[in-house]
Image (cartoon, rainbow, N blue to C red; front, side, top):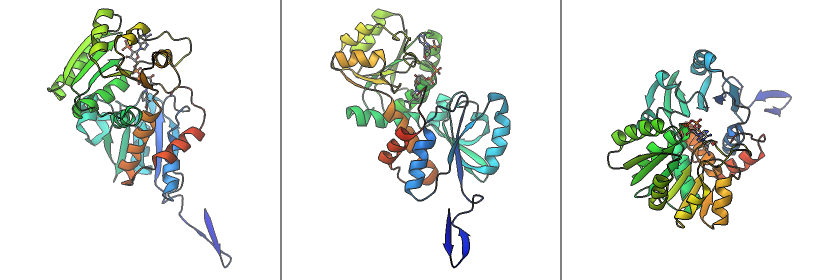
Length: 300
Ligand code: NAP
């Protein structure tokens, strides 16, 4: 951008001095982070400094050197959220326990890591259902990266119970072990996703279901659990981390349950990243607009 005065052209801010930010992943083309982050930066007159960068796992070291020199901050998505851990100078306790970092701030070439997915979920629950994690009982369907990143935050915020149901039960047990160590006050139980009697018990006791499997991303996907389970508890709030309509959301709607898709989680995790980097309050509604106007998204 240039200002023209008396035939002399002055650059308002040289490209060289502009702080740059990226989201890295593989794949990354689907990411809507540039749309929402650039809307936030533009809101404060800070240009549009945020871009996507495809980084293959085998090129991660190269990216690290580049980032130390050139970037002010970056987001990470699959498969990089855990690869960054050995390179961090500081990391927040919940992100360290989860082994998952999605936000890095670069200060004097050093990396400071955080995970904002849990905050994103917390704010989405507040926005969609008007509830806070403290004292609540959660049942997770799925124990992958998203469940890890969010469960520690919910426990940190005083969740009463976290019930973990996963296809690979060993992964649920591993996560449960770490959660118990991290937050001994939170009750943690596990089950296989196909152990229906145990799931019935979890669904009856829970206040909130977090659908955190990747089932539902494709139209041909089966539901992650028999949908009759949603009939066990008419007070259950159903939060699906996927942000287009899935069979779980459709059934929750038919049963007149409180339910929501994953959109606000995505917006608020980005909002928190923006605040960490800039110290400015995130203009959330503008980030939503930026998110909606960005490239069509295939994954989430
Ligand atoms: P991930 O690490 O690959 O984990 C996938 C999870 O889905 C695992 O628990 C896996 O079980 C389960 N799963 C996959 N296929 C299954 C099947 N056929 N039957 C039963 N379970 C199956 O993925 P992630 O990063 O955690 O992402 C999970 C979901 O969260 C995705 O849908 C993603 O879109 C969503 N997400 C949303 C946001 C947001 O901001 N809204 C942020 C992050 C992620 P196993 O352990 O047995 O393989």
